[in-house]
Image (cartoon, rainbow, N blue to C red; front, side):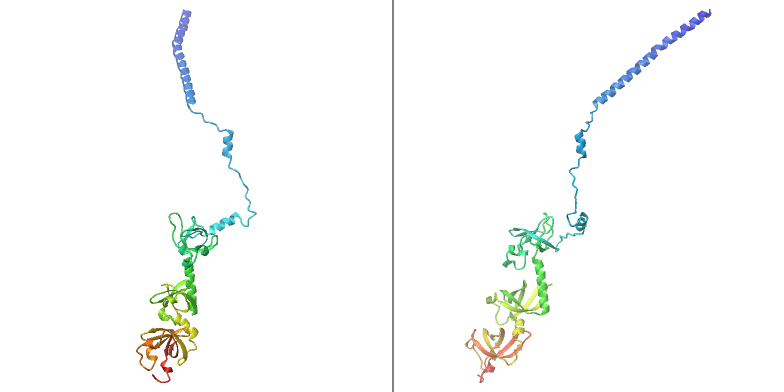
Length: 339
């Protein structure tokens, strides 16, 4: 009976073990299948991902190559790179309007020339700005190529970065400085007559146009015959602010030739012109007025019957204004008898 009970217990144990065996086997089989699927998916993902191309030896050398290297030495020059950098930092490049710069003409053009002033574009010098009185000069002679010259900037940069420059403006300023110095010294100067007008004549003084009033001409009238003559002049008015320059020929002649004249002197004169009120007589380069009432004690009805231009006469100085160069003359005082 004991044996039977023991056998029965073993049989039951074996039956229970067979009942659980299929479940364990199924679980293990599922685990293996899952692992295989996961490995397959990973391998497929790895195969789908593009492989990164490894750099070759040439690529690595190319990345490391920085070009040829040179060992720079500044032993052969008189300054170092530090000196050069300091000089550049201290250099001021001013290309504003009215600035004065140094430059050289590099090329002639139809209406002027190109000038290198160190700007980003060559400046342009118009021909009429190359100097004073350019009507009588040639651009190639006034502004030679490759010769350092000072210029004044007279414009802002245009759309091409080009500036306009001038030499005339600088010469104009220097001319006024010379004229001012001459006026202060009260010196006599000589200048040519370049034009005449109703009021007088125009003289060229130090490159500037000066007005010579007809009343300050000595011994002649302001007509076409005066053009080209070189006259001694003195300044009457100098005003740079208003560009006004007035000169006198009479004042210069007075100082040069009238110093020894006095009332009562008898001098020789040349009749230059006749007027209804008398005659203008040149005396020693000065113009004196011989009034019709001082010609004779008799009444003169027709002046041309008595005097003619170009006639030499002897007359007496009866009055003079040395400051203004005016001389009053008379011939009737030299008559032996009135009439």
